[in-house]
Every structure is written in structure tokens, then in C-alpha cells.
Length: 447
Image (cartoon, rainbow, N blue to C red):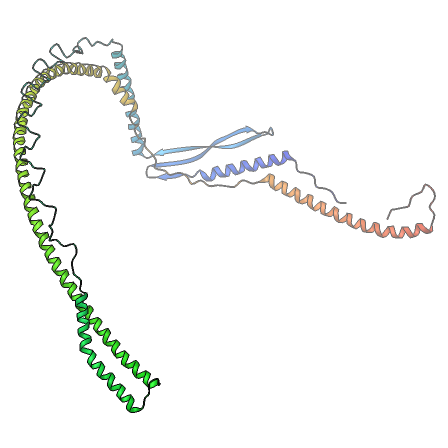
């Protein structure tokens, strides 16, 4: 017979888990309580009894109780004693100072001996510069340059260059040049043809004589070729004569151009010279007039500036003297008032400093740094970490495993029963078909 595992008791599991946790904590504490010995002293742990408590389940649990003991070596113990004595002395001194400070504060503030506060610099302090200070420059200062200063250059200054300056180069200046050179052209061409024509005529007659001797008749190809050659010779001679005539014509043109340019340059240079002389004369006269006017104006302006600078310097000197006198008087009165007020401030500062001296010393004692205590020089105990036991998890895992095994077993049995039922049904069916069951009866399914 297969049985389903019973679920674990939650109470029993929790109690067991609590016990395991307690054991883990005690083990952890025992491992971490390591005694130490150093050149400055020692630290030790001892069990000094037990302590009990009632748990959630109503049971009483007893746990060990430990004591940490720190022991200093003689030198460190002596240092600690002196430190405690010094702290006690400071406390006593602070108590005495507090009594003195409170006693001083109980007296009313008395500043009757302090110099009086002066809020007025005195009757000699003035905000007026006096009658000696002037805002006018006086009659000697002038804003006009006078009659000696001129804005006109005079009658000798010319704005016209005069009759000697010309804008025309004269009738001899050529804007065109050259004459008809056709006669020279024809003469040159005729001269070349006159030289070449006799030779051409003789050559033509000789050629025709040779044609007659050779039996060449007019109209034949040979006759036409010879006549073409004779004509070409005359044409080349005429072309040579034309080129020669053109060369002669160009030479004549260049000669005429050079002659016209020479004449024009001469006229232009003559006009430039004349105009330059007239312009220089006019500029010289104007420069002289301008220099004379500037000289006169400079002299007048210098005299004007000299006079005004003298008046201005006198004005500034008089005003600076009046200003310095007033400032000296005012500074003396102001320094006297400041001196009296500084004396009052020093008196009050010393008075309040003396009144608060006891409280300041008490505050210094109470807020000062503490005396360093003696130490054993021990280091922190290395902490071990002991993992707790997951008892609840283990119980739950065991229960789930048993439950799974039971379910698997039941599934196997049900499978076997289903197979047997199929086989039995086939056999019973054949039997029932041959036998009649009584009314109201049922078949026997037992095995």
C-alpha cells in the first residue's frame, strides 16, 4: 500500500531553524573573539556567566556571556593617569573662570571714561573755497586773435596764371602729314618696267623665231604654251615693278611722318617750356604771398597763445592755492575728529576685552582639542563569516522529494491497473454474451 508523505510541521521546523541559527551565532562569536598581545598592552575575552531569554515558542534559552578585558603596560597606564589628571585640572580651571566671568558680567557696562564720539569735523571745516577761488579767467584772457590775423592772402596772390601761359600749340603743329605719292609710285614702277621690257621683248622675239624655224604653227599646243610663258614673264616683271613702287612709297611716307613728328615735338616742347615758366612764376608769387600771410598769422597766433597761457597759468595758480588752503584746513579738522574717535574705539575695545577675558579663556578651555588617551596598539580582530544552516529549506526539499516519489509510484500503479482492466473486459464480454445474468445482479469484478 503506497502512502502520501505528511507535510512537515512549521512549528517544529521553525524551532529547529532557530536552534541552528543560535549555534551559528555562538560559533561566529567564539571564532571572532581572538586575544591580542602587543608591546602596549593586551586584549582578552573570557566567559563570565550566561544569560537567558524566553523564545517565541515559550521555551527558555541560555546563552554564554563574555567580557572583553583591556590591560595597558605600565608606561601606557601611567600616561592614561596623567591624561585624566590633566583633564581634571582643566575642568577645575574652567569652573573657576566661569565664576569670574559671571561675576564680571553681573556688573553693568560703564563707558563713562571713554572719549566722546565726535560726529562734526568742527567749525573750521568749510565746504566753500573762499573769495580767492575764481571761475573767470580775467580780462587778460582773449578769445579773439585780433586785427593782425588775416584770412585773406592779399592782392599779390594770383588765381590766374597770366598771358604767358598758352593752351594752343600754334598753326605749325601738324595733326596730319604726308602728300600724294602717286607720282613717285608711278615713276618707280615705270622705271622698273623700262628696265625689264627690252629684255622681255627680245626673249619673246627669239621664242617666236624658234617656233617658225621648228614649224610650230599658231593655234597648236606648243604655240599656246610658248605664248603663256611669254605672258607670265611680262606679268612677273609687272609684279616686281609694283613691289618696288610700293617700297618707294612706304619710304616716302616714313620720311614725312618723321618730319611731322619732329616739328610737332619741337612746338610741344616750346609750349611746355613757356607754360612751365609762366606757371612757376605764378606759383612763386603765390607761395611768397602765402608764406607772408602765414608768417603774420603765426606771429599773431603765438602772441595770442602766449598771452592766454599766461592768464590761464595765473588763474590756475591762484585757484590751486585757494583749493590747497581749504583742503589743508579741512584735512586737519577731519584728522583731529578721526583721532578722537579712534581713541574712543581703542578705549571701548580694551574695556570690552578686559570684561570678556575670563569668558574667552573659558571658551578656549572648553572648545580646545581633547588630550589623546593611551592605547594598547591592538588591531581589529579578523572577522570570520560562518554560513548559517538553511534547515527550513532542507526540510522542505526533503518533503518535496518524498512527495514526488509517492506521486510517481501511484502513477505506475494506476497504469498497471488500467492494463489489467482492459484485458479482463475482453474476457468478460465473451462470457456475458453466452450467459444471461439474473435481473438486478451485477458482474463480479474481483480478482
